[in-house]
Amino acid sequence: MPEMKTLDLVALVLVIIGGLNWGLVGIADFNLVSALLGTGIVAKIIYIVVGLAALYMIYFATKK
Image 1 (spheres, rainbow, N blue to C red):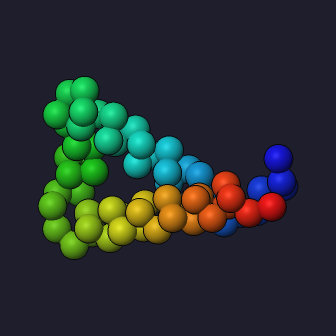
Image 2 (cartoon, one colour):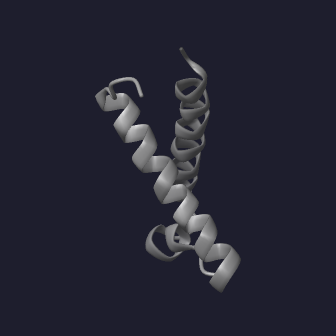
Image 3 (cartoon, one colour):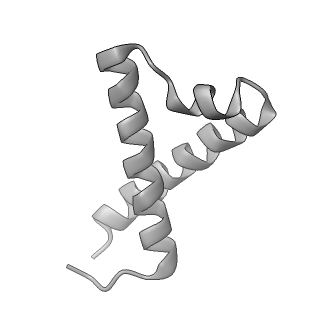
């Protein structure tokens, strides 16, 4: 496994948080992001950042 840089670690944590949130949505119909931040622009920014982290993790997982 390659050495993780700060960006790699931040992206991994964001993807884990996003995955746990989706797990809560699927299991309990509970969206933690919406519960904590509402449905405004801040929540949208969080969703975008988590999505970008997921794209970065795809890159990280496939780089040699």
